[in-house]
Amino acid sequence: MKKPLLIENGTLIDPSQNLNRGGRILMVDGVFATVDPSDGDIPQDCEVIDAGGCLVTPGLVDLGVELREPGFEEDETVLSGSHAALAGGYTSILAASSTDPVIDSHGAVEFVRQKATEARGARVYVVGCLSKGRSGKQMAELGLLSEAGAVAFSDAPRAAPSDALLKRALEYCRMLGRPIFDSPEVPELALGGVMHDGQVSLVLGLKGLPTEAEDLAVARDVRLAEATDGRLHVGPVSTMGAVDMLRRVKSRGVVVTASVCPHNLMLSDAAMRSYESRFKVHPPLRSPRHVATLCQAVKDKTIDAIQSGHMPRSREKMMNDLDQSPFGISSLETALATAATALVRTGTLDWIELIDRMSTRPAQIASLDAGTLGIGRPADVTIIDPNAGWKVDPSQFRSTCISTPFAGMELIGRVRHTIVGGELRFSG
Image (cartoon, rainbow, N blue to C red; front, side, top):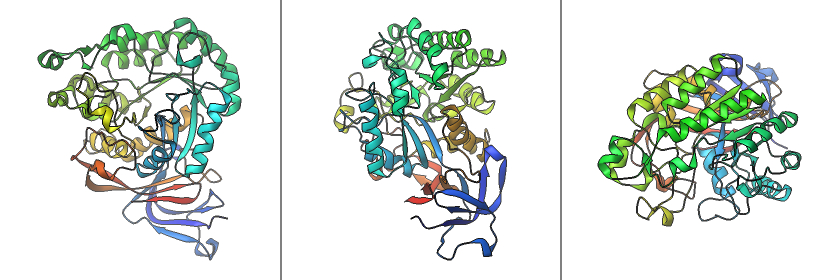
């Protein structure tokens, strides 16, 4: 049985309760028991964490992580990815279906869930395939996948290519109470693209990924969501056009949510001048105007959530020439600090707003029992030193992948402890 755990001397941050004050919180039997307990209410065998100078927040929730197992264990495993998540402050992550075999059967869902139980890292929730074999041709057995434990459906990082399939799936998922996630892109327009299609790509002589590929896909997605009244999440998004479309449909009361990656909030396509594959991300780093628009959209809640964009690829794969290397980076361990550096340090968000976008809101989108410090709820906690500056050293990553655009960069905000179900699983 887990020992009771008390966190004291920290600042409690909980967007779900509009909580932002000093205090202490007691966890018993894996759930939050009491806020500001009296000394007489604290069990004698209670473990204590001194969070002086730190923020005590609900555990972070990530809406899209590639764990790559089974099939691509050279890139990442459930074990390495779930422990990288802990180091980044994540207590819950949604695992994408980009595996081999893909997650389109009861057995595939159960395999990932069993691996996650054995790993004892962050909680791993499975995203089942939207289409059989992730082929985009025939809808997967969504009902069976839901019964097996899938919390959402997506072919990400591939887009849903068939309008008819997406429409049917949105209608069907209303009965299941599960959301559909789509990575918006028109494949024909993006074919062969390496980076943002703009002035920098022209100068570098690299084939561009045009913004229209994302804009048109978002327009299609939100229109089908409006027509079907289905639960749709689009993301990660990266363009001004996508933000404009989302803002318009939300103003009409259409229930659609969206997310963005922290590197798209901090870096621009100018980074690609180095020709280094560690800057080759998807969606790509866009021009400064797009970056500014995305930051404002996170502020005004046009974009609901920030997801890590963790797409691990092995060192050997990333050593190819830029046009031959795959899209992908390791970002679970840097996402919080990147977002804090891009948004909090610049005054765009405060910490309670950032935790809302990285914990409370993602949990609501995925219908997870997370993202809160509420009494009786699962005791998932991230303890953050908001003022700690640190230099990113990929050699220290717990992820198998060490490709990151932030190598050697100074970021702010350091995860000190990550607690899952009242159990301390990471100390930095």
